[in-house]
Picture 1 (spheres, rainbow, N blue to C red):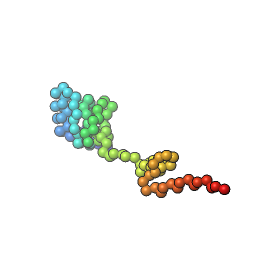
Picture 2 (picture 1 turned 90 degrees about the vertical axis):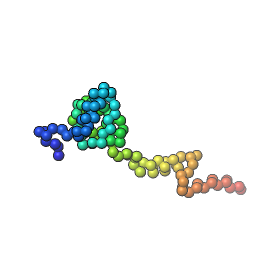
Picture 3 (picture 1 turned 45 degrees about the horizontal axis):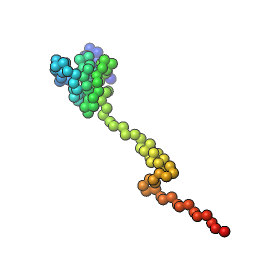
Picture 4 (picture 1 turned 30 degrees about the vertical axis):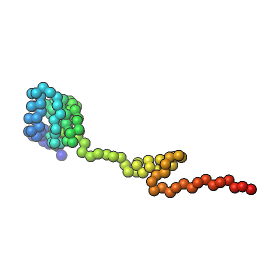
Length: 114
């Protein structure tokens, strides 16, 4: 559900004070933001955002969105099936060391003498 238009965008007051102080100093610096629910206003353009303090430059196209949309909260390490397939593929390559726990390959049989 969206916020009512007559209420206006929600922004925590401490963030506006931080942005105004940074703009008054004349430096474009990183502002550490914990408020994912706040809306990005034009006053924040040119500053950095980050919940985990990962630098994200705020630009004009982000105005109107929430800060939480640009601060990742979960790390994706890949699918477990991809890791299993990768391990199985390494063991199938000739000359590659066998995967731990894999059965040892049998030695080739000597040719029979007649």
